[in-house]
Structure formats: C-alpha cells, structure tokens
Length: 501
Image (tube, rainbow, N blue to C red; front, top):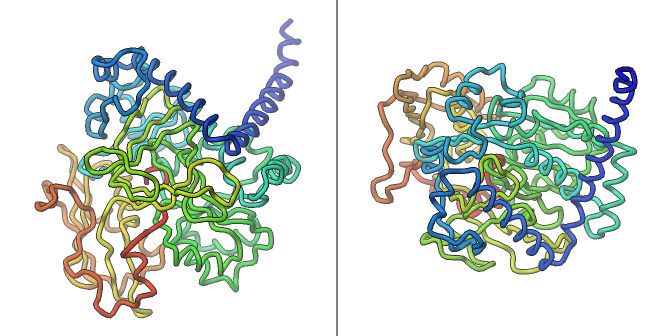
C-alpha cells in the first residue's frame, strides 16, 4: 500500500500541474466577455467576499453592522483607510493565526524573504504615505491570479485577435517565454514578493532571469539570456536604451514597466529604442493583479472580474470616465484573509471612454497619476534631469527603523533628506546615505554633481496649507529655461507605483 502511494505521488503532482496550467489559461476568456457578463461575475464574487468578511473579520462585522446582510450596493458601504486598517489589523484579518506581531516578527528576519508566513501566506509591507506603512497578507489565490493574468492577459503578440492571443498563450507551453526581471527592491516589498512565490506550473511556459539593475555584468547577462520580455522601471530601461549598441536582444517582443510613472515621451523613446510595444502595469501592494498594461494604447486594462476600482472625487463621489479622479477606492475580490473593501488609495485615475483597439473588453485606465509630489529638476552635465520619489522610496522603505522620510530641494542640486524614526529606534543615517547613493548610482545619477544632506529628525509634519504629508518638496520649482520636451513629467504620467513600492 505504501509503495503504491509513493509511486502515485509524482503522477498526482503531475496532474495537479496540468490542472493549474489549464486553470491559468482559462483566465484569458473573461477579457473578451461582454461587460454585462463581467459585471455579473464581479457581483457574485463581491457578494461572497462581503459574506466572508462579515463572518471572519470582527472589524468588518462591526463596520458593516448598520447594513442589511444581503446588501451588495458597494457605495452604501463605508470607506476603509490604511491608518484604520493598521490600527485594527488583528481584527481585520479573517485567520486568527495571523497577527500583526506575528507578521512583523516574521519580516524582521531578512532570511524569511521568499518564504510563506505560516507556510501559506505571502506577506509584504508598503511605504508609509502619512507616517503609516501598511502590512499586507496575500493568500494563494491572489498570487495565482497575478501569474495567470501575466501569462494570458499581459501579452502583446496577437493582441488584435482573441484567437491569435489564445494561440500565442498555448504556444508558450511549447516554446517558453523568456522573462528578464531587472530588480531594485528586495526583501518584503510587494514588488519583490511578486517574484518570490512563482507557482511550479509557470516554469513550464516561462524561463526567468532575475538580475539586480546595478549588476556590473547586466548587459552581458541580458545578451546571454536573450529575453523575449524585459521587465524593469522606466528609468532603468532608459539607461539600457543608452547602451543599445551593446545590447543584442533578437527575441525581444515587449517591455513591461512598473514602479515609476511612465510618461508619454518616455514610452515613445523606449518604443523607438527597442522597437517593441511598451506595456505599463498599474498595481499596488493591496492588489498585485489589479491591471495589465495595454499593448496598443497608453494605460492598462483593469482586471475587473476580480477587482473593483471606484474613481472618486475629493468627497468620495463617483467620477465618470474621461474625467480625472482625485483618488480611488479599491475592493480586492480575491483576498479573503485580509479583505480590502472600499480601501482608499491616493492615485488619481482617468478611465477611458472608448473601446480599446487591442481587443480587450476589460475597462481601460487611460491615465494614472500617482500621489502628488514635487518633481526635482537637477542640473547635471547633460542638462536638466527630473528626480522623482522612487529612488528615495527604494532606499529608505526597507529600513525598518525609518517611519517616514521627506526630501526637500533647497537649491537646484542641494537636497536635504530628513528621516523620522519609529519610536524606540535610532536611524542609522550613514547606512541610509549609502542605500540612497547606491540607488541613485544605479539609475545613472552622477553623485559628484549632487549635494545630499541627510539628517534624523524626531518627527515630520504635514504641509500646513493642505494638511497632507508630502515626501518631495521643492523650494526651487522647475527651471525657467526647462526644455518643453521634458515638461510632460510636470503635467501628466500614464503610470503609477507597481505593487505598492
């Protein structure tokens, strides 16, 4: 009997892999369904999520106490903020084995990066936007959907034809897609979490190269691997484009960007340099699979069969497609262990008004404006260059003792960076400096031309006129002689942080 069980185990595992692969391939179909069909599926999943939240979460049970149990009118439900969720973390989660102390203790050991909390949950933390970082617990369904959507909906080839895209997806099983991921964030960031828990079936249809963006042999490794898909931040890809004569990527089919705004000008520069479509994924740590970049138009397609994104104004009233919203309210229909229901995010989104030419019938996010921060225009040998918040984010957010940071441009190339510590801890300013310099160096900034002053402060306060906290504050503003070619960074971006960097 034991021998038979042992012998059959590999076969059972094999059939499970087949089953999961077929499930993943089926996730393509909803992108071609009529909006009414997607809406019905969405409502069924919303009804199930609300029931699970009421049953398993003391926080939501109390929060929804005034509403009938059969109510599914989402706009009738109260909004949840990050500060509220973190203050009541243990009451929010539906698994009593998951506690804030347990998650924080698990993440305090860097050796746990890449491991599942309690053997079944992927955990991550995002940056604090107003002195309040978020702890995120992802169940397996969230991860499975992320990879399935990347496999099926995140394609460029055959985008104009449902049959063509399906054939392309099946072809992957015979000739695996080669994906190169140029990483920057490590540890327990959502963007790192994305790649640390790849399901076994994915290796049937994809081959991966993970390489730090600052690897001295980066060009050689890319040439040797010869990717068909290249995933990185826009700034990293722009640096690669400057070395296009040393890059030989004959198999390259598309670029996927995330973690930084992708402006229209940058998109065109990358498309021209690499000669392939540029897909800009928009997501957040609270919903890793939120959208997939569109291969033919700016923006990304919302995976609305598994997520609801309400675009609202400053007073939480709905904003129609074609008009920019002040913020969004997210409902993740897949995460049942830490439900996110009408969860407030500060991204300003504009939904498209016309059907998309790529063939997807999922709603398209036409533009995504991240949380409003100043742009630092610095003057270097090549002229003016914009410095955004992401190098600071990637440098400081992994430092557990840093509760919040703020960068102030006091002169054109002089930045003062203030670091607020978590009570009971001390910020290692020199370690923070080294991380920032490394991140800036990785993205091509000449450190000799920058004057960086780092200091630890007891607390950071919101901006007095707006009462909102700002990470980036410029006292100089854009230069008067700034080339109009670069003004798109000041006005509009068609990208936003991926996976809650």
